[in-house]
Length: 137
Image 1: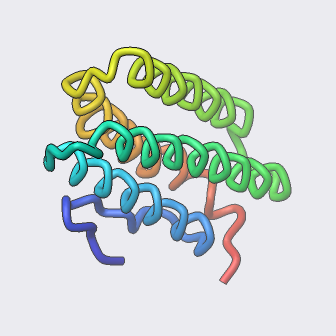
Image 2: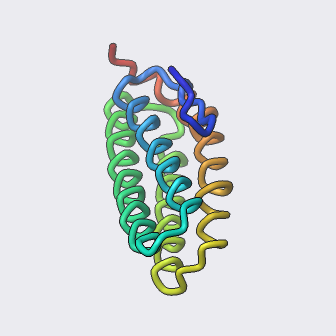
């Protein structure tokens, strides 16, 4: 699968629906990166809008992924689910921080470095191991 404009390689899993979700989250991160780079009168509201959509997408994605893992009795399901829940709490805390302080530097660091780096590692390790059990082509 192709890389995103910012070099996010998403070709790590074998399940097509989950792979589409991965591509979508990187597309959303790229959109936020673009907004962060483009100061405008609407920048703060656009960041809020896109960030809220990213958090909701991730919560929905994690639910879909966990349903598949349960349906196919994937190993390490509980550990995987715990990691998803930890990251959703982290995403929501970052969103809350943004909404309270509109701290561009903090949100840029989180959305450009912290979250994408975690996501790459998670896809390449935990998802890559779990999702072959739920392969649907």
